Amino acid sequence: MKRLIVFLGLSLLLPHEAHALCVNLAFGGAPSLAAFEGGSGGYAVYDPQEYLQTVSFEVRGEATGATCEYFVTLSTGQSGDFNQRKLAETTNRLNYNAYTDSGKSSIFKAPPTATQSEVIAGSFPVAVALTQTNTHKFYWTVDPQQVVPAAGTPYTDGNLTLSLYSGQLLLSPKLEASKTITFQARVDSSVDVSLVESGKRFDIGETTQLIDFGTLESGEQRGFDVVVRSNDGYVVTMQSQNQQFLVHSRAPAIRDTVSYSVIFNGGGVDLSTGAPVQIITGTGTTPATGMSFPIEFTVGTLSGNEVAGSYSDIIYVEVAAN
Image 1 (cartoon, helix red, strand yellow):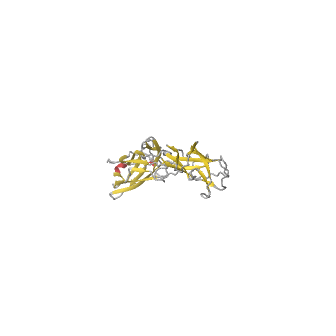
Image 2 (tube, one colour):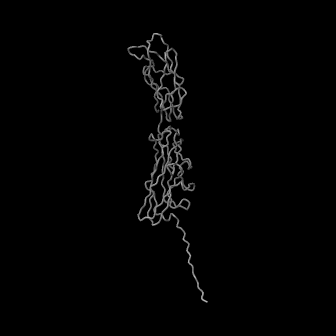
Image 3 (cartoon, one colour):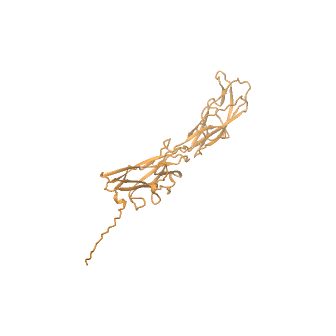
């Protein structure tokens, strides 16, 4: 009997770790600073519009004759919380966040918290070229209408790291490169005044008021509200064109005038010099609805000998950063 002996050679092919197929992965053109730009140039605290910022960067690698897979992550920053990153200026804070897509459906994160949609993934295919480059983008924005004080220095978060890994998120990736990035927003000084009917809130479009006394009578009163909206120190001034007199429409041919008094926020105001008079100053911030100050005008004593006609004065109210 002839015995046949068969030797079977079995080999088990194990996949190489994905990062072994990537050579000299590195960032290219990754910015060190991402500065916020809103409609006013910086961050306007009363602007309801959201301004989505775009950050572009490159990933570069050398060809190896095999597919290279990689992904990019972003750390939490100074807040320590992926779900609510923060820009800071001394004790004041601005909430912001970064996203992997322009629809803001996925926050830009890092392992071990991140899921596949929360990192930016890419690959280099098999190629002959010595160096390959991919361009990527991520997005960030500061939440609108956060009323914080204007400051001489920007609100910043400088503790973020953009990290580049070879391999796949869940398969022991290898850190290949990192880049420190600072997010920054300059908070604009926003100081505005609105003249509205008594009891109404701030309205940026309401900048004039007509006080109609009808047929003038001694002691007749009318008024409105001066509403100030500010995230800065401010000063409000008032000035009378006719030195606090109602003047006949045919002046100077008719020299008759009617005096009146002014009460602003409970205190008398003297506009008789015709020069601007400071009526109030403020610091800190106001809500978006503004801070209201009532103003009241009272017709002085009529002699009864005034020429009939229309009498008027123009009063200028101005607010400025202080």
